[in-house]
Length: 246
Ligand SMILES: NC(=O)c1ccc[n+]([C@@H]2O[C@H](COP(=O)([O-])OP(=O)(O)OC[C@H]3O[C@@H](n4cnc5c(N)ncnc54)[C@H](O)[C@@H]3O)[C@@H](O)[C@H]2O)c1
Image 1 (cartoon, rainbow, N blue to C red):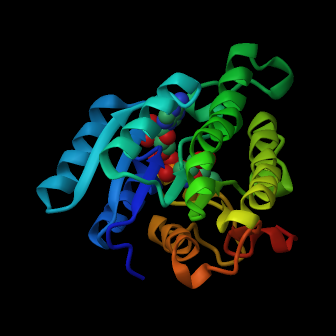
Image 2 (cartoon, protein in one colour; image 1 turned 90 degrees about the vertical axis):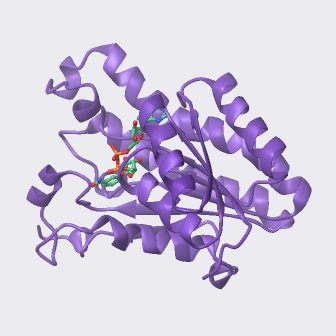
C-alpha cells in the first residue's frame, strides 16, 4: 500500500493508535496533519516525523470545539491542497479519561457530557468539516473508531457504549452521503488494545488483547485503494470476543 503524497488528517494523533497511524502513513509517503488536545505532545509527534524525513504538521484541537476543527481543516487544505483521508482516533472512555468510577446513574453530568461530546459529537463535527472538500474533489476516505462496547454494551461504560454505537450509524450515513461522490466511510471497532496495560485484563476468545499495530494495519488497508469497494461497513477486530460465551 502506498500513500505517496496523499494527505491524512488524524485526530487523537498525540498518542496510542492515532500516533502509530500517523507514523506509518508518513513512512509510506503521506503528508500527515496530526490533531490532538494535548498540544505539546502533538507538536512533538509531528516534529519527530519531520526529523525522520516525513512531512507532518501538528495542530492542537479540542474536538468539542467546531471552530478549532475548522482551523485544522483550513490549515490542511491551505498547506497541502486537499484531504484524502480523515482518521478519527480522538476519544476514550470517560471513566478513564475523566477519572470517574461512579456507576452510570451516579455519574456527574459533566462527565456524561464530556464522553458524548468527545466520542460522538467531536467525530460528527470533524466529518462535517471535511466531507464537503472530499465531495467536491470526488475522492476521500473517512475512518471512524467504534468499539466492541458499542456493539455488546457495557454496564461499566453506559455512556461510552451509546457514543460508540452512534459512531456505527454515523459511518453508515456518511457512506450513503459520500457514495455518489467516491467518498468512502468505514468504522473499525476494536476489542481490547494494548495502548495501555489495563486492556490486557479484558477477555477475548484468543486469550489476549490486540497489539496497536494489528488494529492500525486494518485501518490502513481500509484507507488504501485495495479497499475501493468497501464503504459503510463496521469491522470488529476483537479476538472473537463478540462470538459470545465470554
Ligand atoms: N485501546 C483500546 O482498547 C480501544 C478499544 C476500542 C476502541 N478504542 C478507541 O480507539 C481510539 C484510540 O484509542 P487509543 O487507545 O489509541 O487511545 P489514546 O488515549 O492513546 O489516544 C486518544 C487520543 O485522543 C486525544 N483526545 C482526547 N480528548 C480529546 C479532545 N477533546 N480533542 C482532541 N483529542 C482528544 C488524547 O489526547 C489522546 O492522544 C479511541 O477512539 C478509543 O475509544 C480503543
